[in-house]
Structures are given as C-alpha cells and as structure tokens.
Image (cartoon, rainbow, N blue to C red; front, side, top):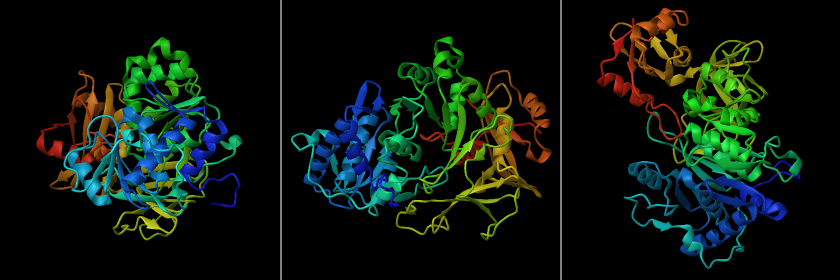
Length: 502
C-alpha cells in the first residue's frame, strides 16, 4: 500500500495473518457466541468455497442479510465473500422488504446470504440464496486467488434519511487502510475489549468489523441496545472502550441504570467513549463525561462516502460549544461554495481528504461529492482561531428564516440542555411571511409545558432561533443507525397541530 512492510493490502490477508499469529485469541463476541481468529479463517474459507461452487465469480455482488444478534455469523460471511472474490453488500435484516429488494436490484446482486431467520421476500428473479450451512463439506483452506487491492470489495448503502439510499463502492485497499501486521501498532491497546451496538449495514458497523480484525482489543457487540444490557456487558467483559451513536448516548443517560452502583466500577474502567454517525449534542457530551469519569470523550467525524477518512475530535468539557479539537487539520478544509478558502473562524463547507483510494457512488454522477481525494461532507462548519471545529448544521437542514440562517444543531443543543428533555430534534417548516421557521419535536417528562420550555430557551437562543411551534412525542423517528428521520418529522408536523411557544 505505502511501502510500509507492516501494512496490509486486503482484509483477507489481515485475517490470514492474525489466524496464523494467534488463532485462539477471541476476535468477536456476540451474546454466547465467540469467534476466534482461527475459526474465523476456517469458517470463512469453507463458506468461500461454497460460494465459488454456487457460481460466485470475481466482481459478483453478494448481499449479506444479517441481524445485529448474529454479528459473528455476519463476520464469517463478509470475509467469505471477499475471499471468494465477490463484492459484499451489507444489509440489516431489519430493513423493510422494499429496501432489500431495491438494494438487490440496484447493486445488481445475483446472490444473497442470510443468517438466522428467513431471507427477505420479493427478491429479484434469479437470486441465489445461501446460508453458512451450504459450506458443509467444503475445505476450510480453499485455494483461491488473493483479491487485488484495487478491486471493488464492498458496496455500502447510505442511510437514506433524505431520500433513496445510494450505493457507495469501496475497494480492498480502502477497507484495509490503516490496518497493520505489527502487533505493537494495533489500535485500542489500552483495552482488553471494546463494546458497540451498531447494526449490520452501517458505516459505523463496518468500522467495528475492521476493528475486530485489526485491534488489540476483542470486539464485544450488544445484540440489541438497552442501557441496562449495555452496562452489564461493560462489567462482564472488562470493557475499556465504548462506541455509541448519539441516540444510544441519550437513552443511556436517561436510564436509571447509569447511576446503578453495580455498574459504577465498570464505568470508571472505561478510558474511551467514541460517538459517531451524527452530531453529539453538547449536554449529552457533558453527560457522558460524568457517566464515564475516567474516559476521553471523542467525536468521530466521517461519512459512508469519506471513510476511512475521519477527523478525531477530542471533546474538551471546558469548551462544550465545540465537538472537539481535531487531532490534525491536515485532512480537513473549510471552503466557500465555489471551493475557495475561508479565513480562520469563518463558516464554510466542510471537506475531508482520504489517504486511501477514495470511494465512489455506484453507477451515477457524484453530485460534486468527490473531487480527487477530497470528499464534500454536506456540512457547514468553521475552525476557530484555537483550532476547535464547530459544526453549524447539515447544509440541507439550515433554516432560512427571513434574513437569518438558523442552525438546527444549535437549537437542538439548547433543547437538550433542559433537564426534562430526554430527546429533541429541530427542522424548518414553511411560513407565509418568513419563508421558514424552526419547529421542534421533543421527548420530555410529563410536567414540561410549551410555556416553560419557551422561558428556558429565551436565555439560550436568539428570537429568530426560537422554535415557533413544538410537538411533544413519545419518541423521535430514527433509522436503525440512530439518525433522526427529519423528512418524517416534517410529515408529522404537517399532519399534527403543534402547540405554539412564541
């Protein structure tokens, strides 16, 4: 990859190395299932042989329809597809049947692998369906050619929070970027194990799969996220690193389990809490710092399109207005809409640079997202004079109200600061005079009223930032990756009659 003798060109090569070096070491734990490196190598080898026998050829797209409770089986299937020369197309088994059919059709997949349970209905005609049981009788060490680093390895679909999901292709070298053969350089060396509850089919989940292959720490996955179960896993496995999305962090901090004395020692043992997939509200970041008092809170800024490029933001509780100071600014730039530079502290469009061969959309124009190794993130932000990044909003979510532009992230931070607010999201809705105004959907305790919320917000927001209306709900609509479905919020707000707070 770079001339570094410790670098790895493909994930199958990394698995083969780790199986040979320390095959009995546990790589992945889900519930009662344990997967060590030797078993991972042998099971994926036999499965790869079965795929080749079923007709999978280099470049064939193979959909993997697996659930969060079957992470070990999914890990085997994913490496089997890569070893067989196929292109893995991860898909959660919680996806709607229409989504599964769309992904199979759009990716041009002729094969689908699934774990426990039934395959999705209404698959395109001619789709071959297999499970790991088809690997019975095949050699665990098949003679298969090593995939080339530049070959397409994965197609991952975006979350589709604003429209039809897009397939994003990644080559083998892209997936293996940063992986190593050098035991001294393995990430997460401060942890015996790390914990996550990300679903299959998400960029965050795929990052954890690569960590399971590459990290010093073993990967523990929660089959389904609940605060009490998550905290129990901390204690049972001696977890040193925790990875969440903001929705999980919000639920965790709202649970009585987070103050349960039975988990106090386990929480103090955590040294890293990482958040990804969406902006972490300031009050939530501060709450995580209190819940895990010995941990560094880290925001990972990346996207399905940009990975493996990411900015590691070290959260500073003394500067809660920022998600953190980037460890390096070399691969981040802030530009005008035309692509020119902006002055320090000025807002602009955010771009990340990939050191690996960049990804690309599947079979369609890139809409200006990819420019060489630079990837347009679709966010507005600024870097202040001290080097702290400030995320202002998603470009599409900025509310243009009269002469003002309102950041929904800033409104959401203010809402989350109220002690009775458990979850909140803000969107723009049409207004006959101003064009748009802010509306909020809030999950809160029964005692909170619109008038009390307005009084609270008056000290934190400018008049034009105050939500014109608020709707109290039992939960926010989110996709499986934990991202708020803002298009669904707008539909709800259009149908319901929110209470005015202005």
